[in-house]
Image 1: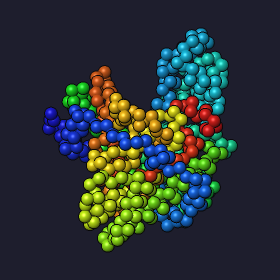
Image 2: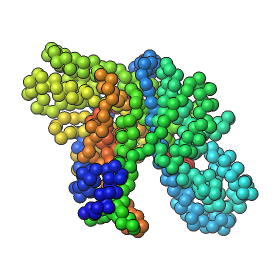
Image 3: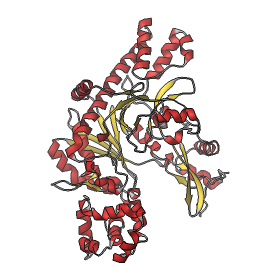
Image 4: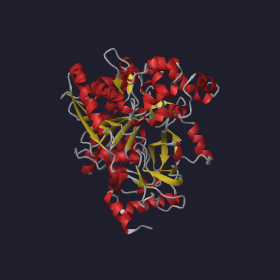
Length: 515
């Protein structure tokens, strides 16, 4: 299957031949469906805090983080091209004149484009777009009056103008302010200043970016960060990393043979956001907040975000302290039966981990070993919002192969909807995953976990793609908050829908929460 030059190519990417063969086997066999035991709801598996408990946890946050190193991690490597899909399609076929508008107004599929043009002055990038067109002698409003919509869109998306189609979301203007229009990345600086600093008054941020965009990220942050350092009286420590080529996955033909480029080399594709577990693994911190680049809001409604970041942070640290206390006792091994029962009770009622039936038949030392193994893991607290029809994975109680139950974030592609019982469980789900995580990466002896040891390698995603007119199959690694964290201790807690404001299309920036 592999030629000598193939082996050299694989080695140069830092991928083992064994891993490539496993990936090919995954294509042949497919990934097994997750076995759902129940939806994680308020009845079981998902915490809904009282107002009193919420306020108490938020109040305790500053004290709890005082001695800890915090990092805010933001995956920011993806290009923004999907935000502008409808604009792209429109500009490719629209005739720039009034007759063109009359023709295309009959096509309802382009309603979103006309809505965009009608409100173009309201976007934070409007000023930049006006200036870049003026440099070439064009007045944006005059071109709009002449119905030259595709002409304007090209200046927004193409390299003759703002080149937004090729930039990452973090470098797009998202929000209006009296002192200047902010890039998405600036909103993350503000967030980090509010909940990502301890007594050292340093906000640590880590952005995963593509190599092509790193320099522009650095230049942009150099321009803007001083303003926020002065405003919040802090310092920023900002680091970048790229998705490793060693996490790329092989592409195959429909017959599961290596897909070859025109020059005969094998096509490898990025392994998806699950590859970022490697980047997270290299961050030196006690606590890491993870949030998507596009889920930000203007200052006027940030308070709720700050409050609930503090809530999930406090909940994580208090859980961490409790778990580490149990591990100290378990390592000693000298437990009374009552102490052992207390740990089981905590596992069941607080962590929603149900032991397999055989555990009760083991002798005491074997049970201690099993409990130690269950608790000596990285921990994450995941904010979940009520399901209001937005796409995305959700919180579920999952039945593991050994008969135990655990909490997992599950995507729809991992569920066997043909199985009526599984489909019925999905119908009972009340919440979904907005990617609002806070993670503890060190064990009870302050050593960093090797996060790659807690990945469920039997999970992943296979999709059908094409290149140069030829069909291929692509494979993504276990998702960052799915299979890549499958063997972590997980806590789900409800957070308000106001904390979830992603920008998936450009017109999302016109929603009330982005004005």
